[in-house]
Each structure stands twice: as structure tokens, then as C-alpha cells.
Amino acid sequence: MPRVNTSTSHGLSEAVAEDGVPIAYEDRGHGEPLVLLHGMTESHESWHEAGYVEQFLQRERRLILVDCRGHGRSGKPHDPAAYSGRRRAADIVAVLDHAGIRRAALMGYSMGGVIALATASYHPDRVTALIVNGAHPFAEDLIPLRAMLEDNFETWLALLKQLAPDLSPDSCRRIRGNDLAAVQASLARDRPDFAAAFARFGIPVLAISGTLDPRCDAARKFAELTGGEFLPLAGKNHVTAFLDVETIGPVVDDFLGRVSTRNTGG
Image (cartoon, rainbow, N blue to C red; front, top):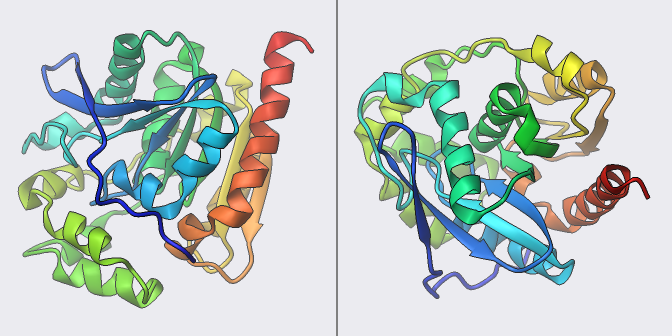
């Protein structure tokens, strides 16, 4: 898949979370707002590199690309308590407030998908729609991730390269450039089950998963629970499902178009 050149530095703004942690984000384009939340050990640049930003800007969307706490240019606390779902959800609200946005659609991949779900759980009035790829709101044991990141990023990188042999040099650089203690703190607690909340919110949901991703069944179950939509990506794993922008982009455009029509009563 062709990659977008990411050598150009993108201008970032900075919101301040309720606990004082700075949250960096990029604000691009005009139109209906869409917040993009990256996966673990990545940054907002991953959306540029994969080609999502270019595609969504052509659809006249306002994109808010967040560096999630512990990553990128955002603050990197080393206290596990700083990475609760409530804290991470509050980060997104702080960004929306700073950007002057009342409500937005959220699109998250993997860890970013969990953060999007947490935001909708704690602040449903700020979320117009949810798009989650490789993520779900059910309980998850993070012991395997903690083991891979016990000493450095090399075991984690080896797994990613196994799943996506053409993982870009830029992505490898971003991953190795992380603050290990911050990433370890973010994984110190297993993810709780908060799926029940979504059955009553009525927020439109598009769940996406590669059929080779172990999370695929949970993503499908989440879509069924919410009466949402499910996009299975045949033959894709947890990483290549993110990179399949040619398939995902048009489906997301169609989904958000229908959500926008519903919200405006059209």
C-alpha cells in the first residue's frame, strides 16, 4: 500500500487535561468534526502515514488528530492511575473544548478505539458516532502486552513486523521513541468490562476488525449489542486491518454521511 510522506512536521495545538497533563492535537480541515485516536506506541502521525487524513480531508471533514496521553507530544505520566478510562475520556473532552467543538464523531484504532469507547461511556453527550477498529468494550487481560514491553520495545516491534512485514521506518522510529515507563504505566491495569453502558446510549456504532484479529468476535458482538454496523476485513490481522484505508475509508464516509443526515433530521 502506498504511504504518505510524513517528513513534514504538522502544527500541533495543546489542550490541558483536568489533571494538568498536556494533550497535543492537530486540527485540520473544515466541516463535520472527526476525532482520530491512534494505537498504542504510535502517534497522530500514523493516520497521516496510512492515508486517512488525505482521504477524509477530501470529504470536507474537520479532523482532530490527538496524541493520546503517554504518547507523541502529549504528557507522559508514569503513574498507572493517570491512565484510567475516566482520565483518558476527559482528555478528549479537554481537546474538544479547546478546539471549540461541542460534539464530534470519534474514530479509534486499538488503544485509541478503547479511548473512544471510554469517552462515549463517560461523556455520551459529546459523541455523535463511534468508529472502532480492533477494539471493544469488554474486559481484556493485558498481561501479554505487559510481558512484551517489560524491558524495551524490541519484542513488541518484532510482533508488529510479523503482522505487517512492511512496517515503515517512520513507524519503527516513533515506536522506539516512546517513553517506556509511560507505556508500562498505561498497561498496568487490565481493561474492565464497560459494554453494558452502550446498550442504552443509542450512539451510532461502526465496529471494524480483521478476520484474523483475535478481537474479531468481540468486535462483532459489540456491534450486535449496540444495533450497530460491523465491517469484517477478510484476511486482515490486527495491524493490516488499520492499514486497509482503501476499504475502510469509503465505508466510514458512508456511515458518517448517514449519521449526519440522522442528526440533522434530513
